[in-house]
Image (cartoon, rainbow, N blue to C red; front, side, top):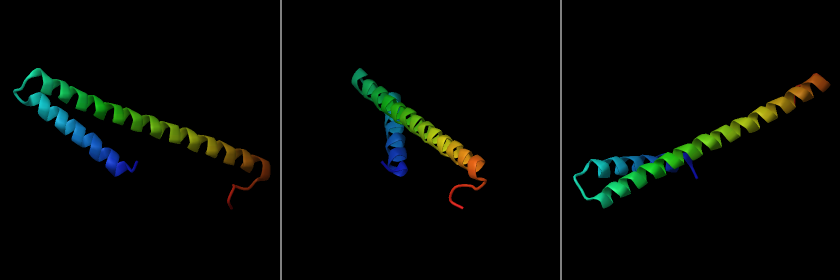
Length: 78
């Protein structure tokens, strides 16, 4: 999913959740607001985990390139 769509969905969930929690309403709308905020939180956590997984791949690629450089004296791709 593109980042712009992900940020838009997260922002709309946060905004909707806060609006519903701040309106004078019944318990049902408050529950829906909490659900929207929870969805936004889960999307945010998923994005952080995905970014962390990508950095691990980058580190492994860098370590492999360094090992290649140590063996051959040349950086891969040069």
